Image (cartoon, rainbow over all chains, first blue to last red; front, side, top):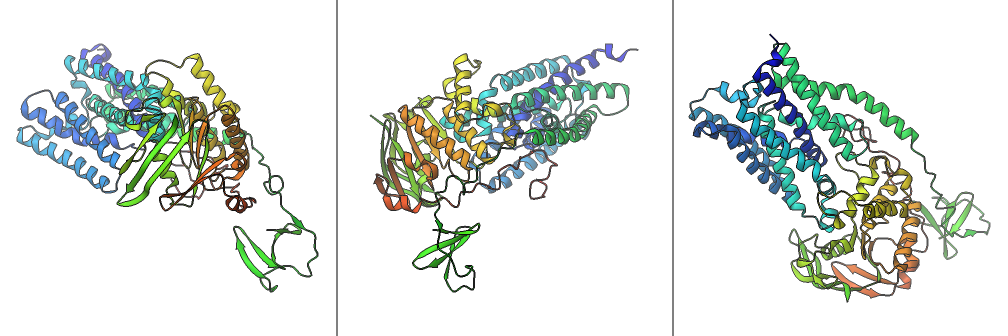
Amino acid sequence: MNLLAVDFVQRALLAALVTGLAAPAVGTYLVQRRQALMGDGIGHVAVTGVAVGLLTGTSPTLTAVVVAILAAITIELIREKGNTSGDVALALLFYGGIAGGVLITGLAGQSATTLNRYLFGSITTVDATDLWVTTVLAVVVIAVSVGLLPQLFAVTQDPEFARVAGLRVRGYNLLVSVLAAVSVTVAMRTVGLLLVSALMVVPVATAQQFARTFRATLVLAMGLGMVASVGGLLISVEAPVAPGATIVLLAILGFGLSFPIGVVLRRRRVAAAPIVVEDDPFEVDDPHTAVPEEHGHQHGPDCGHLAVRHGDHVDYVHDGHRHAVHGGHYDEH
Amino acid sequence: MNVLEARGLTVELGGRAILRGVDLDVAAGDMVAVLGANGSGKSTLVRALLGLVPLRRGTTALFGEPLASFSAWHRVGFVPQRPSATSGVPASVREVVASGRLARRRPLVPMRRGDKEAVGAALDAVGLTDRADDRVSLLSGGQQQRVLIARALAVEPELLVLDEPTAGVDLATQRTLAELVGNLVGRGTTIVLVAHELGALEPLIARTVVMRQGRKVYDGAPLPTFADLHTHTHHLPTTGPQDHRPDLGTPLDRAAGGELR
């Protein structure tokens, strides 16, 4: 029997494809904001969302999206404040989220196996509705991430400058956070909430080894994410391995292979970069006055003249003026 | 009409008064240097003028429009004080400079020819055309400063605000900057420049504002004594630590100090 002709495998492949494209697109902005682990935090809180879905009998994907978006907005507001206690606040939020999820799942009378489907992914149980929701969300994430690239790049690269360029920095930052939340939920069924951050970040790290521009990094990361996602699924169809873990390990393998190549490439670029010979400021722009007079001695710590520290050198006070050693002569300072 | 107008600017950060009732008027075409020691509030002053720090008291207006309702940001260029132009993901020089053009672009609309020409002209003005497609992180500190200046020029501003553009940059960059500022002044651009040391820019400055402990203590022609103090330039930090030390920016590379970043 050809497994690839089976319905659920086809659905899984499509889900893996869109997830693999969407997660690194948002991940690029998170890495740019130096928030590589934010996806992981949102994933923790989304566990509570899944549990609420299980308890109330609504779609866990739907409740997870809502809770993940709320969590992402909270995280962004805490980050905006930028104080150190924000770090602790985030820890409270993340672990509260996962603990609450486990507790509520128990109250709902569901086993840990049910929760595991969301924690580690269960791409083979994706039904037609799930696939529909996942695809629509992923397409929205990709469209916004690529379409607003110049704005999102400016805001994540230098928020203060972006404000003076008239961009609504807060709005765009919240948008990145919401996109992250949505892609966490999209990837939940594929790689699971605990591994989702890997699919958002690892392809970006791999793409960085080769790309010179931000746009190229984003596009290449999307491609690499897709290859890892689809490739990992295909492996798990043939071999008795978990798809989520296989996808993530494949992505990390990609980084492992690309890293040495990247090191060599960068060395070459540094070597090839033109070395700019700066003019010597002491020779050109500095109208210094060489003192013609003969000195009977070398100025030094023991010469008896008052020594004055003057920036990076020492001046010696001498007959009412200050002399500094410069090459073979003295300068008037 | 004044390009910049501030009345009674008072800024408190963390319960400390950083600015205490500063008034400032900058007319169109002015070239003003804001001087002062570290912690004198000079940087906070220009940041408050642009709305980047919250005001405790006072009002500011840009081009006659109160800051709260000001929206013509394409008339303003800003060079923030930053140690480098890099960030988490590699970006090319051209991309960073092009982000300066956003105030004149609409979301979801690709760059038009005029936008591309402005970006090209800005790169040319700072002498980085040949490095446009390189990663910013491969540039020296002075070149990265020039990238930030080009980014501010890309919008073709009427008011250019520079926060310590001369801090820790090489002589070539200082000269480029002086030449550039001279040209801009000639074209009627209003320039507000925060500086610790004027360096090569000194001959261009017609008006200085001196800040001390959050107050404006002087506003007028450059003081000869101040100028005298800066006639020699023996301490140009031409070999600052960030120069020619490319930031490789991958998790396992070693930083220049040998530590894993």
